[in-house]
Image 1 (cartoon, rainbow, N blue to C red):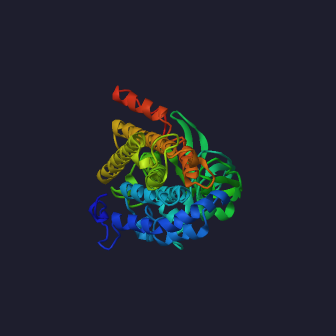
Image 2 (image 1 turned 90 degrees about the horizontal axis):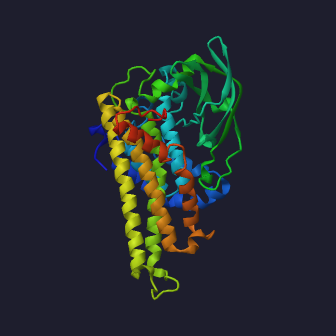
Image 3 (image 1 turned 60 degrees about the horizontal axis):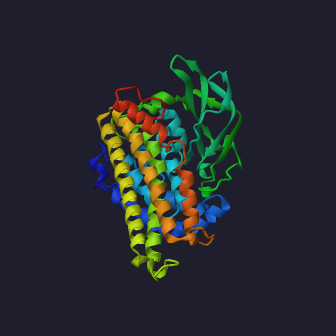
Length: 404
């Protein structure tokens, strides 16, 4: 982790917390999050008290503009903080990541929309299920919208939501528009019944004939490419790669899971035997030592790739330029490769620990489930990022996906 945030962000106040200080706030919350994680898994939602604790620590305001009282940090800080939250409760980390990424999205909307969100409540929380899924009618001053948006992580704690619809077709493909709507005008359909990441409560948002004014509608592709409708944006956070920010916040919980599993398996090794062997302690077993070394190295590999990609996002943002195709494709590859290594590390660790990893009383079975759901998010499958990166290395157009 690098030093002062004011060294990377123009105009940053000297009194703003450093990256290290923000990570320490997450570390301080770890005991509370660890204690609440099993119940969150059973309840299919993180306890409100833990969400409020993250809010009070400023860890849900990492990407909120400073002018509204936010911290306006950077991708590297977000990665480190969300990873640390994940060492307590991966579901809470996933929610924190999505809520932070959603504030980044809202910061690209026109100023009037931002004022509506944060003017009265600088801690307002936003979810963002942005898969297009709505019917609409054009009316004077905006749209009337009816639709459903699944996988709305953080919706149980949000006051606003960013959703999407397809307004029509252009020569370049679908005209996808993002819409900002108050949660008071939406309902939540209880649909999140999953094998892992149960605590995220990623249910479905439902709109029935909701009016969305023009100033709360924004084209998706320009936002994805670092362009904004907001006024007065200078090179920095809000000219970052949006695809990069979205992947950062979803990789952080996976890093936290792997660190938590490694900690647990190392801690228990001296008190566990290796069945049907001469070893009364796993820690004396050479095969166990080799598995532990490989798993730790895979976790380190994941962190190195994730930190390089996050540093690239921040470096390009400060120049006000989008990454070129090679950097954008490599960024997606970095994160997908990191996720693959985290999954393989955790698989090694639970196997080395033994069959009891999957006992209901063991945290390892929950963490294994959480990781195997998290790394199957559409942004982490290795095939598409590998194809994009390979095409770019050969001088071909990498854009087989809009999320690059």
